[in-house]
Image (cartoon, rainbow, N blue to C red; front, side, top):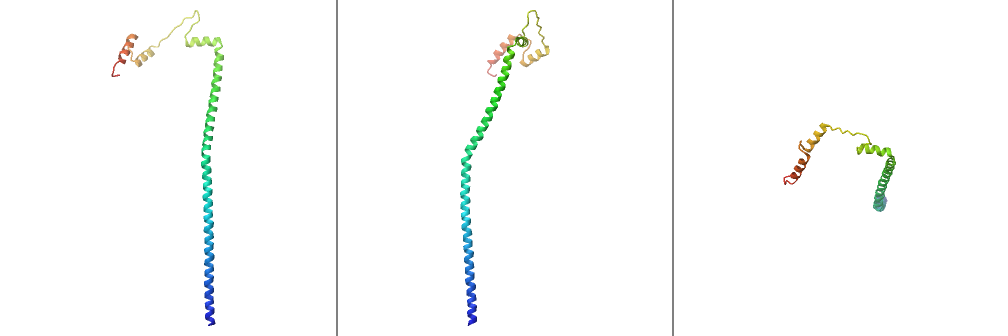
Length: 157
């Protein structure tokens, strides 16, 4: 009987030891799940904060970039305007010079000094090409004008 009792007590001890081990494992798993759930909650809160910051900063950042682009455009326009002002000042200084004015009048307006004789050279090939481009013939100019007026009134045109 004593042997039976020892066996029974050993079996009882093993059972109790197994129950204790199972309880420890269960508690350990329960703590891990609690820690995971807390970590998941913290991660979700952190993600929410980060998303809120991104949303809150998106519009000001877009405005900042847009304003920087606008400032760069305005600086470019200012530089172009300064360059144009310098060009106009140079032109004004040149126009103060009588020799420059005379040269411009001779080149562009075909002015002559007293006693000079002007000659105009006409290139026949250029005249012929111009007439072909306009569809003109050897008729007088006023005939071409009147034909143009008549053709303008046609409904098929």
